[in-house]
Length: 209
Image: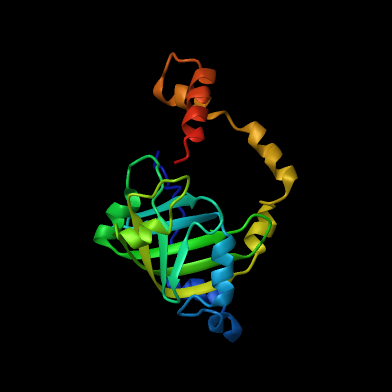
């Protein structure tokens, strides 16, 4: 019996545009090439962002970044600095940026449906003056990412409204997901009790910096 592929067909860029239509001129006009006072204020209140990078072959990665509101610093109207806080040490973003310096950021503020999107190019730095501005809990990051801003604009809140991300009732969905300890024990075939793994992870999370 001949098996048919379940892989969905690819739609061409021309077909995509034909189906979606053209954006309104005001949508194009809202894309700025700098960080204005409104974007600056949003970044100063944002405790979380997602960071998209890709290597030379186009293999993409999206990484979360978070800290106290304003952890990302606006160095000037065309430059941001993002501290590299302790994490899993995979350094996927750094590796990608060494091959392809393009970067895309999406800033969120809890409770607000709008997202601030920033696109540009980035590189790592250990410049003392930059790192000193990111001191937290009496510690400075070892590195920071400097972002040269090419585009910045507010993305409408439809996605967050549809997802009900900030609705407290949505948090009940977390009860339907296995704990990190249960997932780790199952994926790696560990004899360790999931509760013990969860306790160890909680201890790691307490050491934010």
